[in-house]
Length: 122
Image (cartoon, rainbow, N blue to C red; front, side):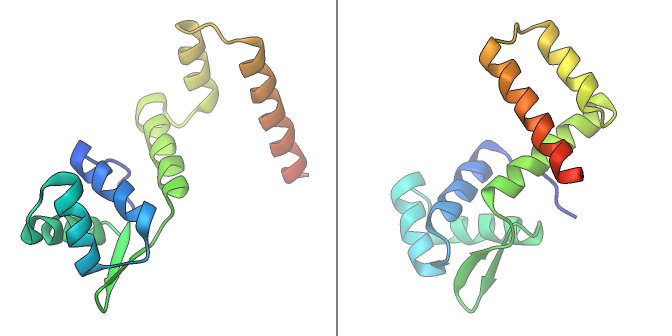
């Protein structure tokens, strides 16, 4: 079970890993030193946290992804809708669109997504 919430630095760190994975842990330390001015211990502490959450794995000194960034973002969206809208996408869309006028392009994109989903469900 994934928890689809990351703090700001955890998110930036995860993005760095997704961008370079698979990456040797020593190389990741260098990347973090350059990007965040982190010491080696900080990098390994953050890596351990995200590995415990089954987002990444460090196997024999090589950091690999357990889930893609796209899978993580989809899970984060699903978790947000579950926690805030009782898992109802229509309730979320109604709440969202009441404060945000949808453009014709956005409406067309939503219709297309629904049609594609209906085709997949066959």
